[in-house]
Image (cartoon, rainbow, N blue to C red):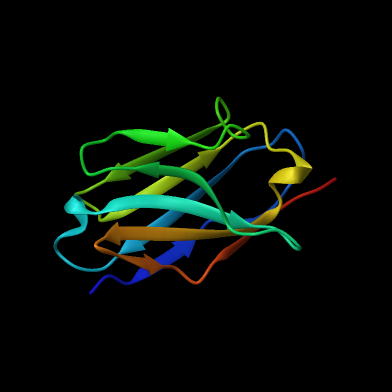
Length: 114
């Protein structure tokens, strides 16, 4: 099964950048669709970005042009490069792996504040 370990969260000033990483266990990482979701207090979990096994990407409208999702199949790792961060990006960010069913990371807090 897939186990996901997230890292890279923290505190950043508005306009700053941060890169989240999600390391996955297993030898079949390359066939999973990988995604990043986030959940802010009082809001439902929402898709931020995802990348398929074939490299196709999707982004939430709110992050288009600012966030980039990528994957390195040799390292079983998916990344979310976040730039031009805004206070409204503050949330717990979750790594997701999908193939038939969903697997979730524990969540990684990102706080954008002065």
